[in-house]
Amino acid sequence: MEHSRYGDDFEIGDVYTTACITVTETHVVNWAGLTMDFYPLHMDKEYAAKTEFGERLVHGPLVFALAVGLVGSAGFAGDAAVAWLGADKMRMLAPVKIGDTITVVVEVIDKKPTSKPGKGVQVWRYTVKNQRQESVMVFDYTMMFHMRTETLNQ
Image (cartoon, rainbow, N blue to C red; front, side, top):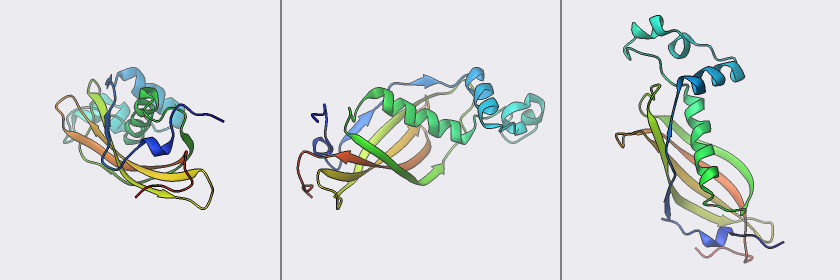
């Protein structure tokens, strides 16, 4: 099968930036309903006002999901991805508040062949930034890709 992109198209050090999205009250309420995560820091305005943050925060897993969605929507990988293999070294670096606007900067940080012909594994570092260009979340996203060649050039 012919693909629009292949893992061979990506080199260590390549950097991509997504579009932005403003995280709204609707995102937070829908996420809570979907996941059953009604923790008061996310859902109770009066409770959150008494915390060190002074207001409600966006769920960390929602920030992760939005980051994955922003990268997928950007289409950087085309149809090269075979499978998602996991996320590692995830850290929440700063709070995301309702009304914050986030974007994702992606850097290709590792690539290696697999035992399967025509397949390779890559690690892309996702750094989620807010409207002030502060890093709010970082994680390493590992995917298997279709390759044109049998081995990756290191």
